Length: 535
Picture 1 (cartoon, one colour):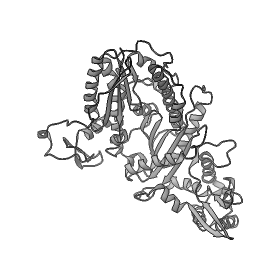
Picture 2 (spheres, one colour):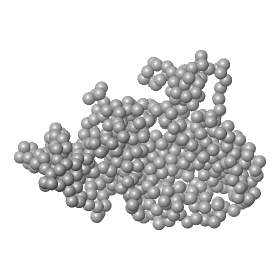
Picture 3 (cartoon, helix red, strand yellow):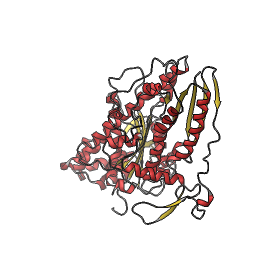
Picture 4 (cartoon, one colour):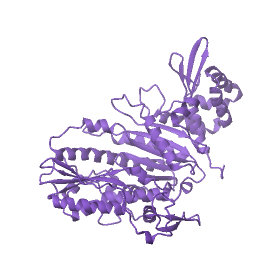
């Protein structure tokens, strides 16, 4: 007999960002990673998980180029390497991406493990919802074993500090008081979930955790910081959300196996390939980003799982990092076998002050990633794409409404209706040989040309004035642009080298015009954005 226990986590991001501060987010991610990748598998092995009677032929071994292979775990019991074949031999079928599968020979073993796993999840990941189910493969029966996964009360009322609520999450009762952070003398009442986050942050800071983000953070020699303000210094904060393009369609296109275990092994091989490809690209992108710097300050991996990546960094690093990440993905997969489709990403970058509400910033980054993927909606082979926004205010409205008001201009001229797009966002990240539109890579090259040419120093005030003139119409903007040749030859020369020669506009179709200029000026302004205390 073969019984499969399946565990599915729910509302993971709600759990991770319940306390929206850098140290607590890192601690929550470490808790989650270690529980799913090590504690649950070790518990399953303890309760008798075994390999299926017949192992699928397509089971994949470790991939030699995986960066995890070279990292020593802090705990000897933790199986760090990504090796599906080795895990299947121990009865662990899946442990990544918020999913867990374990194989047992008897129903009694499976149900005993399920009960213990439920207790473990409630103890290690309080406030996180989950589902547990049991599959009898031989009789093709699917049984839902999950009790409603609302977190159980972890403590007794008489142990509470004067019956206070948790001031960190806003939910549940407090069990202790703790300092707000190392830079503040303020203390707050905290509940069990908040306290565990802080405890795991301390372990992360001491390099004692083995979650994927911590492993890559150590391998890339990225320092740990406690607050977003400490991460960014004088700069604005950029939150980068990136995930794979078209993986749902790719999954549907995979060869379907008649045997459940064969199909599961095939799917796990696919996701292993995606995971390793993203880790390799991340390693290369970070190494290239800091190639000329002795210290790797200003970038922190918040979440890395499956094809999902969440990174916080100083705003001046963000677009260059995404460009290097997409290039690394393309380079790594040039000689890739055609067994699975190539991995490309859709990235959203939300830029704001470090004190900007994190939940809102994260929602913006996700919305921007979805906006970027509009480009590839009808593409047979997706490419990496990006969208970004810079917010200098304390709040930001609906993305579509803000852009409709600020980036589109429609007016009557010569008995015609002329429509101007003042921004070309979103962008493909890498240049294509036959692409008639600019890519982020080309925009970054133009930015470099304008900012690094000492003999053609570009006046920022003139560029910003030119952007304002774009709101007065195409002809007014081009007239102002051409006047630069006389009034500011150096500025004109720099823009000419950047690709702007006769006009700021590119015709798309009759009476419809597009400009990259405002996006270029925005890129040039991002490194100069500073918080109020340092502005």
